[in-house]
Image (tube, rainbow, N blue to C red; front, side, top):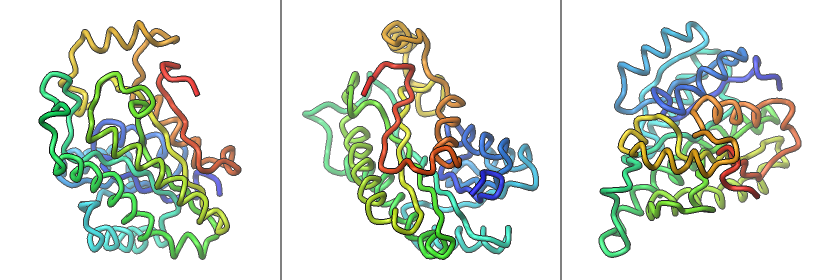
Amino acid sequence: MNLNDQIVIITGSSRGLGKETAKAFAREGAKVVINYFHSEEKAHALQKEIGEKAIAIRADIRDSVQVNSMFQETKEHFGAPITTIVNNALVNFQFDPISKKDAETIKWDDYKSQLEGAILGALNTVQAGLEDMKKLEFGRVISVGTNLFQHPVVPYHDYTTSKAALLGFTRNMANELGQYGITANMVSGGLLKTTDASASTSKEVFKIIENSTPLRKVTDPQEVADAIVFFASPWARAVTGQNLVVDGGLVMN
């Protein structure tokens, strides 16, 4: 299915990487669902910027009832079901190397919060879209990971663990759903410059990353968004179960 025939939902897409991903899909002619939870004003501003190809819908991705309702509302609005899911939402987390919890202070509730945002959120979106994707014999699931679980420069214990689990989730879904024409992949960026989540990161940390990266730059959200679009495109039709690291070569597989 060509990009301009797809209906794409990007969770947590009112700002940061999610916003740039919505804009990238719209640029290629896809219809986009701007999912948000708190940032209503930003979501509707983005919808206005994109135009008639976009709709903004509030839903907590951790709540299956709200997610199912969002998928149904999208189907009614566009007259067709969602074909492409981008699991991007980041729940209650800041990349702050100074105030992060260490091995002595981190609690199970911290892990649970990130696992619910990453795994429960992705499970809800996949299950909400699965019936229609099977009928279409087409589906694209792209989850946002991180290069930190391969190269934990800063030990964000809860966040990194949840993203590592998300890769396991992705590969299991890829294995089971491939028979229906559904692919599942992950795009793992490095620390992005600059998003709300990375606002607490110091200039010194960004400089260290810049100097350690072959491209001698910190990856920006637009670059990661383009890689996400690739996985939904016809050029990636035979690719599934993969984790593409987009960080300027800091991590090499």
